[in-house]
Each structure stands twice: as structure tokens, then as C-alpha cells.
Length: 109
Image 1 (cartoon, rainbow, N blue to C red):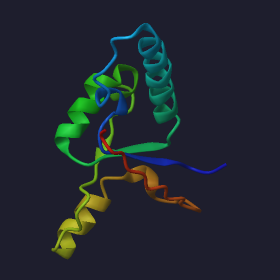
Image 2: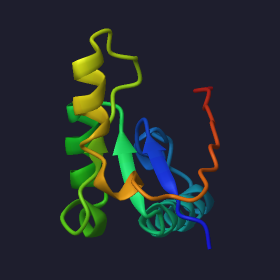
Image 3: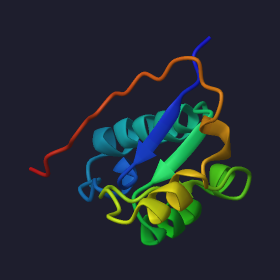
């Protein structure tokens, strides 16, 4: 099958503050569980900052210690040496036959 790289900006379960109704609690429990399980299915997880890496580790306790994510900053470094250094910190990406990129965004309502 395909190898999957998951790029996390921030865990979704921390973006949902409203959980007061019983239905919303059950719904979020299901969605939050699915988020952690499916995130764990990725071959490699990347985050956009050291801050997000720490949030990821504390939020996804089963994933954060077993397979901590790598930091890949969303901006392109200016110096060629810096770019090589950043990319070389992703050992599992080497040797991928195909890469499928899915870019998503969320809007806070």
C-alpha cells in the first residue's frame, strides 16, 4: 500500500470547546478517538512547530511517546544548508515510491 505522511497543525480535539450537551460529549468522544487512531495509522507524523510537537505529545498520549512527530516548519528556509538540514530530519520519507498530498484547513465558527 501507500505510505502516509500526516502533517498536523494542531489536534482537532483541542479546537472544540463546546461539549456541554450529552449528545455533543458522545459525538466528540467518538470523533476524538477516531482522530487519534487514524493519526496513528500514518507512517510518519510531522508538526508545524516545536510547540505543536509538545501539544501533540500531551494530547495523543499513546502516540506521543511511541512515535513522536518530527518538526517541519511550514515556511521554506532561505539558506540551502538549512533546507537540507530540515529535510534530513525525516528519515522515513526516504524511499517512498509515491507521495499523496492532502491539504486541508479548518475554520473556527
